[in-house]
Amino acid sequence: MSALSSLYPQPLWQWFEQICAIPHPSKHEQALSQHIQHWARDKGLTVVEDKVGNLIIKKPATPGFENRKVVVIQAHLDMVPQKNADKKHDFTTDPIDAYVDGDWVKARGTTLGADNGIGMASALAILGSDEIKHGPLEVLLTIDEEAGMTGAFGVESGMLDAEILINTDSEQEGEIYMGCAGGVDAEFAVPVKWQAAATGVIAFDLSVTGLKGGHSGVNIHLGRGNANKLLARFLADNTTELELAIASFSGGSLRNAIPREATVTLTVPSAKLSQLQQVVAKFEALLQFELAAVEPALKLSLAEVVTPAQVLTAETQTTLVHLLNICPNGVMRMSDEVEGVTETSLNMGVISTKTNSIQVLCLIRSLIDSGREQVESMLSSLALLAGAEVKFSGAYPGWKPNPDSPVMAIVRDTYQDIYNKAPVIMVIHAGLECGLFKKPYPDMDMVSIGPTIRFPHGPDEMVNITTVGQYWELLLAVLERIPERA
Image 1 (cartoon, helix red, strand yellow):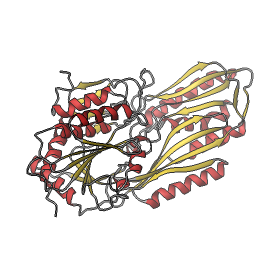
Image 2 (cartoon, one colour; image 1 turned 45 degrees about the horizontal axis):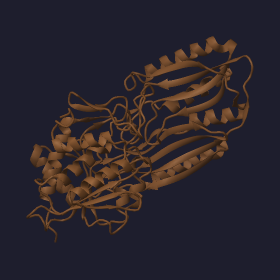
Image 3 (cartoon, rainbow, N blue to C red; image 1 turned 180 degrees about the vertical axis):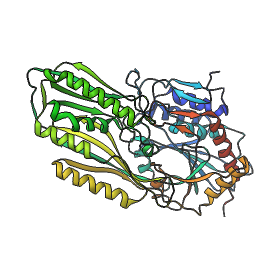
Image 4 (tube, one colour; image 1 turned 90 degrees about the vertical axis):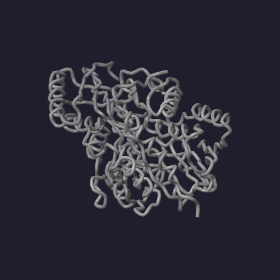
């Protein structure tokens, strides 16, 4: 028995180990989906794969619970594929190398996939049990939650019989979520023109590494460095003086992850090399001072590379640098209604250099539509001033809190009874799928719970073992307390 499989509760951790062994990044969930379908059919469960790839698995009630309200436990199949730069890992073919470190489960050099693999594992463990007491049960496993919520958008009315939905995608034990932010993708396309690189120059990759990154909703208020913004700041302050010419800019890999690393390839006149090295060292020291409390491993580095054949024209470079430098990023406004929760935010997640443009992908989140629309307006104005294009896509609604939710009251009271303390009722600044489910199922009563997961969407992701056990006990107790149908 492996270290993971021997943890409590064993059925959950045994499933999580299987999940880690089967690659399942966003857009590549099919192998895991097929594995689950074969297992469920072997168990005699009803399995349906809908037209977008979501799985609906149904299990009859345990004896004596047939008249309880139908409950659907919901999780998503995919995981965020993030790794450290020095880690060799193909998320489409390689398993996650998970290990136990004290009271935490971590992964070596990559995201762990506890988001939302633990929730998925709990649902599958319940489906596989002959001892857990529950009423008529459904499990909904959606695809592509982390890269566009394709699965949640595809959920149709009539697929589910449930009156109650328990989402398992929350990441703090002791907190019950009853609302979440909506969001929209914003993609800039900055048109570029090229010119031949000058003679008498040296080319370098200037890189920012060592940042924590993390979830662009859950962690956005923590003041962590955004690698894209830090490089933009450097370029805005030093490009003219050092006569730098940019050949490419790349940073981040996901719109919903705070960028941990970014690199700009640039040329500098040979006579300015020493000055460049001094300025980089000074800027690194400045950032290490400013971000000492949140980014202790921050590093700037220069690595000489082959001189590129072409660089951006001066006009293109000026537009790009100042657009990146002035583009909003981070918390835009804190909520007035829910203390300590971000209302509206923006994450400059991905920058990539194409032949005819440089693309900048951002994610706007807000608890209220008007907050999201305000940031959309700001980015539209910025694009107009810069002569760039900005397109908005994939908008999804927030999940409006219902303080009178019956299932929230059941979870709250159950937690109080088990642990002799009150849980915290929360709204999360992240895109749970519950808001999308409200369209086909407007009367469905929803709540979200989960164990403590630290640093989701980054290679430092870890899940607390003790809280997985607490989450499991709460989930089972809640299922046993679901009331009868009217």
